[in-house]
Image (cartoon, rainbow, N blue to C red; front, top):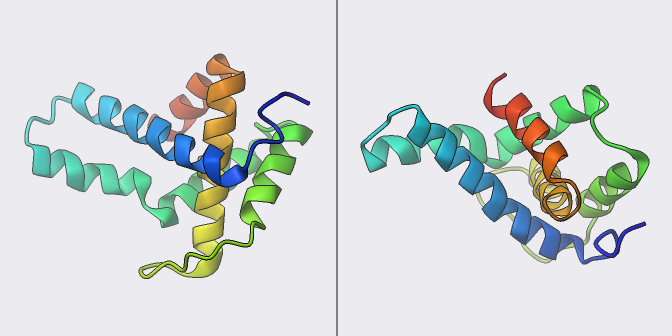
Length: 124
């Protein structure tokens, strides 16, 4: 256990959302896209709840996560939140929250693994 493994999963998701967004933006900028609206449209292909769910499922199927990380994913996915998404179903939203939470946790605990995960997602 680490000091971050007991952190509120929504706090981890809050951080993970920002971390993932930075990686995606940097990746797109490196592709020499110069128009901001194009960058924003391309970013949606990565940061939407639907795609975050897909990425999480891909990473789980590749056995990227250890038992502790899987428990954080499950805690985040099963968290009883008060927000209800308007443009996606609740299951997809919960998986996206779990994706963001594990990105936040791994950001704190294992930068090398974070880079490995981002390479899998962004260079698939």
